[in-house]
Length: 353
Image (cartoon, rainbow, N blue to C red; front, side):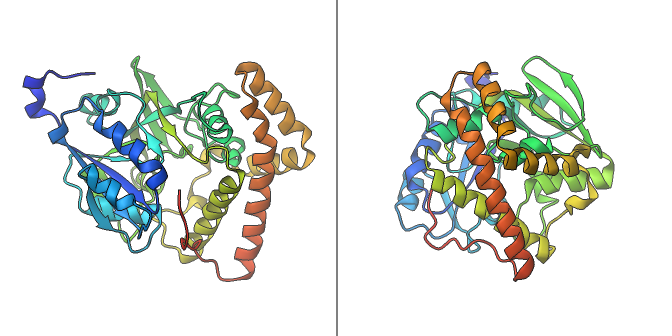
């Protein structure tokens, strides 16, 4: 969707919210992709919420004329909240520093449907872009449509998975408008919507975010709990996520960060919404058991790898058993340690993309 220059006076403003912490290795590509958008430049505000970078991140941000704000709590969720608090746009786009907008029309593709459907809270790409030149872990994540293989077994993923042929396993209402889907989400479950290129109406988020963290998926879950349903849009485009390249150690560290942070907020009870109130599509208990059994037996996840390879010939599929084993070990150990001792967020000392 494109609008002629003489029509841009009515174009909505949009704030790009980017949490960072030593992200110099990826931030330039992210900001360059924002700069290349055919969206009116005067309508775009870039806000970088930085957690104390020492590697050149701030210099890159300033080069691209980003507004830099301090994120004292350092985490991505805290950074989103800080950036949101100073955002002026009518819409906000939650863009991670390791995201790349795949083409110059991406912002219009995300905002356009929201102008037509004012009842929708936001929009999100329905897939991760697969690129031959990316590392095998990034390609694997694009192929399964998620960065955490456990989510595939739970069924509450939110990007196209080549194994299942679906963008989610959660039951929902859906109307196809060609370039995008208008969703009706309710108490049947909530996909993991909210990160890596999700656009929200600014007022929708600002009126619902309380405290120091922005847990985007909790906002939608709480909305469903209180009002019964929420409208959302899945745009049939993608976003590039340079998650881990080919670094297995980084994948393990990010899984450890995920479980440590989750247990910390679970014990702190500072989430906007408790996941125990929603069944995530009714697949959570069985999905967890299936994940453990398939991973321990190895053969089932190897079979899944071959099934994926037949659909898309990429050796990255064979990282699947390794990813499942790392996830099972890291999450299992994290759960045991978190239960025996005081859970704490993973320290961000020395953290970098």
